[in-house]
Structure formats: structure tokens, C-alpha cells
Amino acid sequence: MKVLIVGSGGREHALCWALAKSPKCGELICAPGNAGIAEIARCVDVSADNVPALVELAVAEKVGLVVVGPEGPLVAGLVDRLQEVGIKAFGPSAAAAAIEGSKGMMKDLCAHYDIPTAAYARFDEPDGAKEYIRVHGAPIVVKADGLAAGKGVILCRNENEAYAAIDHIMIEEAFGQAGAEVVVEEFMTGEEASFFAIVDGEHALPLVAAQDHKAAYDGDEGPNTGGMGAYSPAPVVDAAMSKRIMDEIILPTIRGMARDGNPYKGVLFAGLMIDAKGPRLIEYNCRFGDPECQPIMSRLKSDLLELLLAAVDGGLDRIKLKWSPSSALTVVMAANGYPGKYEKNSEIKGIKEAEKIAGVSVFHAGTKADNGRILAIGGRVLGVTATGKSIGLAQKKAYKAVAKIDWPGGFNRTDIGWRAINRE
Ligand code: AMP
Ligand code: GLY
Image 1 (cartoon, protein in one colour):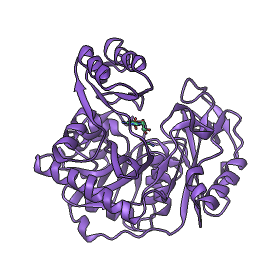
Image 2 (image 1 turned 180 degrees about the vertical axis):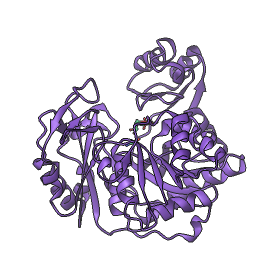
Image 3 (image 1 turned 30 degrees about the vertical axis):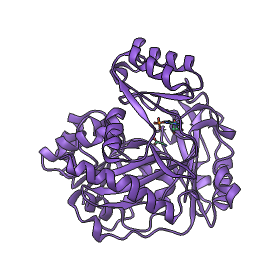
Image 4 (image 1 turned 90 degrees about the horizontal axis):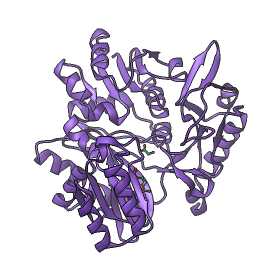
């Protein structure tokens, strides 16, 4: 079967890498892809946001399955448009992707189906939002309702910061239309984890959990990023916690959405806050996490294509997933300056040397090939991923591989996995 992957990040490289192992997978095409993906798939220069061009490409190539990586095209209705022309696609419809595309929609769903999450209120004008902040006090969290490239969440230590956040989103319109509405919610404490389930509209199959490092610098300091590293398993999500997350959060969501006539298909990514009382939902995403997808795919022993097709066609209840008992850990290498302004086109050397270490895969994100050279063209550029018997051993191997990479234009955190390693 010919498969088209949409996206250009480390997540999509890891998905291509896992799909390429399937005996059922024929030609792999990726739009637009990157220099690493180009080694295992045919990359086509169509942007992941260009829905009509992606549909045209899938039709012209007679693709058997489209796998959509990022949230943008999902929220914009790529899966709906592909279904209209009879092409199978892994991912939610636009209506179901609103679970990520509208924080207000997700919070209302939680309230309606009694899913544990932070107490909240929605506002479409600043005065009401500020009054709510005055009544509830700080710390408090202000969120733009719509997609804001991962920047729409503002954690406010005091009331003045919260008022400023409301002005930033609603009056200065920092995120445009995405901030026409806001959610103001309780500040939660605990340990964060990323939980993924593959869903076919009716059944949900949990994947192994992962933990991400959102802050740019060591010690979880500095600005928030898309994720500077991740590992799996997540010690905070043991078997009992995984069952609670399924019973209290994932299954009520799937059943509720089906009951509301808006069934969810694809991967459901729950960002969780876990404390002594149990798991609470921070947010839903309608896609795989990046970098979390990289260590998770590194541990998957089952056929990914079969799994994704079962989600599209229904029948996930017949699938049993096999996982490597090893741990996996990804260190993200990012361009100097990220998540702020960063330089492009610096050369990266040593990737092949890094990959010679057994159990190491270097997943590419913002890279481009240029006459045999690899150039950095994005913020997050590489995901150096290693497996090992423990998270500590996977970490050692990943940093040994990072040391082989010669890239003065980039930086990485040196403490990925610290929380889990402290527990080992
Ligand atoms: P998001 O962009 O929704 O992933 O949020 C970014 C980060 O903000 C999350 O990973 C959490 O660390 C933090 N966050 C979001 N909502 C809350 C909340 N209600 N309480 C505490 N932290 C939060
Ligand atoms: N690493 C978090 C995300 O993909 O949103």
C-alpha cells in the first residue's frame, strides 16, 4: 500500500521510520518532509497547510492511506476532504479536531462528561475575564481559545500578569482570531505526562506513556518550547495509573464524543497533570506529540500501518500491541536562539557517526539537504534518540550520540530524563 505522510518534523520522521518497517507498506511519500525523511521516503514539495494541494497529490498518486502529522491540516479539515474523494486518512475530522482547535470546546466536553480537569470559565470579552481573575486570584492560567502555535497558554503568577495576559490576547490580538475567546482556569500542580490512545471512533487502545521537557534550558528553566526532549516509559504512569487515565479521562471522552455525533478517530493525546489524587487533563491534542512520538515509535514492536488502518476502518478491539521492554530517550538539538529568533542554513556534520552507535536513530526536523551537506532550517532540528535497558542507560547513549554531532549553530539540554532517572 502506498502511504502519504503529511508534515516535516521529527514526529513525521519517526512515523515514516516505523511505517517503513511494515511488510504491507509500499512506497512512502512525504509532504513536505525533510533531509532525514528523504532517505526513506519520496519527499514532495507541498506544504502541510495546503489542504487542496495535499488532496490533489493523494488523488494523483492513488495513495492507499494518508497519515496526518500536525494539527493545522486536521483542524482545517484535511481528513474530511480526503474522505470526500474516497481516500483513507488517519486523523480526526475537523469537528473532532476541535478538541485541540478550541480549548473552550474541550473544557465544555470535560464539564459535560465529568472528566477531571482544572476549574475554568470562557470569555469573549476582556471585562468578564478580568472580573473572574479578581474573584479567583492567582496563580491562574489564561489561554487563547484557538491554535496559537503552542504560545497561547500564559501561566500567571499574580493578578496583574493575568490582566496583562487578557490584554495581550484580547486587545493587542497577539494571536489574531485564535484569541477572540479565552479560557481562564485554575493553576494545577503535580507531575506532567503525555498519554496517547489510538481511537477508531468507538474503541481506544492506549500506547506507552511518555514525558516531555517543555522548557528550553537545563533544570526546566527558560522559555517554553515545543519540547526539548522526551522519554518513554513515564515512571509516573504505571499500569494502575494508565488504567485510571483510560477509565476517567480517555474512555468518557470517546464515548461522549460518539454520543454527541462527533466521533473521534486518530490519535488522542492527553496532556496530564498527575498528583496524589490522580490524573487531571491539562489539554487534548488531536495528533502525536513531538518529540514524544520519537521514543514511543522507537519502542513499538507491532506493525504501525496495521494499527493505523484499524483505527481508520474500525476494529481496534482486535489489536494487541507489542512493546519493547527497553526505555527510549530523545534529546532535541535546536538552532541557537530557539524558541526566539534563530539563524538558518548552518551546516550540521557527524549525523552518520552518531547513527553508528547501536540503538541510536537521529530523527530530523528542520533540516534540508544541499549538495551532500545537511543544513539547519528550523527551530528544532534533530531528535537524537537512543534505546537502553533503563532511562539512565538510554540517556547515556543518546548524549554519546549528541557528542558525535558537530553543529556549532545548535544547542541542546544536557539533563533530559532527570526526573525519571532520579527515581531509578
Ligand atoms: P499547552 O500549550 O496547553 O500544552 O500548555 C503548556 C504548558 O502550560 C503545559 O505543558 C503545562 O506545563 C502548563 N499548563 C497549562 N495549563 C495549566 C494549568 N491549568 N495549570 C498548570 N499548568 C498548566
Ligand atoms: N511535545 C508536546 C506537543 O507535541 O505538543
